[in-house]
Image (tube, rainbow, N blue to C red):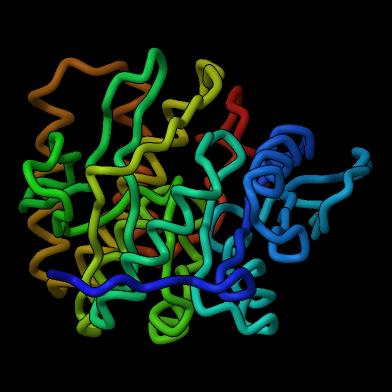
Length: 294
C-alpha cells in the first residue's frame, strides 16, 4: 500500500495565465483561495494587459504585449522558484478546478520522487471528456482516450492544467519560448521524459476547460504554429530525420486532404519557417483575422 503524503500550505502555489481581461483569471483565483489555497501563493500572469484594469485582490504580473503561453508561464515559474514552492500548479484562465484537487495532485507527486508532472482528465463543454494526455507517431501527436488505470503514463500532457515538481521544470529550463503558442506542452513533456522524469494523468481527478469560441481566422494561425512547432519538437526529440519524415507527411496532406487553400498555405508557411529557423509569434499574413496577436 502506498504511504500517505501530505503537502503543507506553503509548499504548493498556483500560476494562472490570463489574456487581456484579468476577470476570468481572478475568478479562478478567488475559487482557489476560497477552497483553502494561500492567497499569497496564487499569482496571475496577464498577457496583453495593455491599459486594461488589473484591479483585483490577487497578485497580478501584467505584460503589455502577448508573450505567449511559454514565456508567460516561465515568468510565473521564476516567481515560483523565488517563493521556493515545492510544487506549482500551472493553469490557464479558462479552466475550472478545485484547490482540493490541486493539493491531491501535489500529494501524488510527493509520494513518487520520479514523477515530474501530474494532470487531471480534461473535460470540455457539457463536461464531455476530451483529453487524458497524449501520444505520438510519425505523423504527429494525438489525444488519448480515458485511461483504464488510476494513474496512467502518456507521452505528453495538455498545458491547461499541470501540477509540477518545481525541480523538474527547473531541470529542463521551463518552456521553450520560441514556440509562442501551441505544442510547448508536448515539447516540455518530451524533454522531461528524456531527463528521466515521468509525466502522468490521474483519472480520479477532473478539470473543466471552457475555451471560448475562436475567431474564424484563428484556424490558420493554429495550423501554422502547430506545424512549425511540432517539427521543431520532433527534431529535438528524434533528430532531423524524424522532423523530415513529419514534414513530408504534412506536405503530402496538402495534396491528399480536402482542406481550404488558406489552411494549406499555413501548413506550407509553417514548414518553410521551421526550415528557415523562424520562430516567435505567427506572421501577420497568417494571424490576420484571428484573436492571436503578439
